[in-house]
Length: 307
Image 1 (spheres, one colour):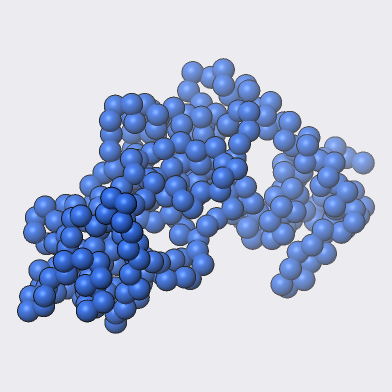
Image 2 (cartoon, helix red, strand yellow):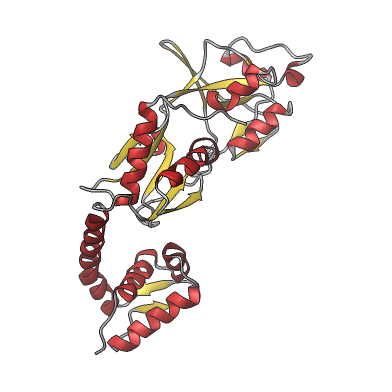
């Protein structure tokens, strides 16, 4: 039997992990016909079928499951060996795949890309923007970036931004001719733009704190969205009241385009975090990003202002 190369086994493991040729091809950065041909060639060389394929699904055969169990530890050891060699380089190289939730992709991550790539020119970054709670291990990502309460507890985390407040805000055009709310309970009399969580479809609660006091308001209104930037745009246009992160609305409050309705009451968020699977040594490109972010936090860099 001809020798089987690392690329074939890597392609096999990717298809087996995703149960999808399409997603495996995307992870590996190759065309779908290429990975299909690679798997067919591997099956012909081994003389066994590794996957049962239909138009709707991909499943491992018994032989495929056995091969996966045998090769996964080997592929893991090879990857770790290559990463150990990478650590001796003056500048790390390789790919870095990130899963980032909105709106942090635009306001937190995008401004960091240029200085990061300037410092590490041999690293290739792929950023997937998705508000769903992506399983970064299953998706083949090196790390994710999202608000703290959405991060699984078994992950290693690094804080990127400080905790921030959620503020109830409205445009002057909306408040014209209407009584201004003085407390969260007053929102019952207003058209509030609600937000639906992209990860599970639930309406996000408006939960306010004032010292030891707590108020959860079941707001109602004529519009529901599932994107923070659309939410902000509609609030600026005077559609209704919104409940948005302070770093997003602060520039608009400063120029008078939005009004904060009650300063004593606000929501609380734990901040934005980079997170990755717990293991002894992150891949060199990920470690480079960790070092880069830690250095910027040490310099006091904050969440870039919304535009």
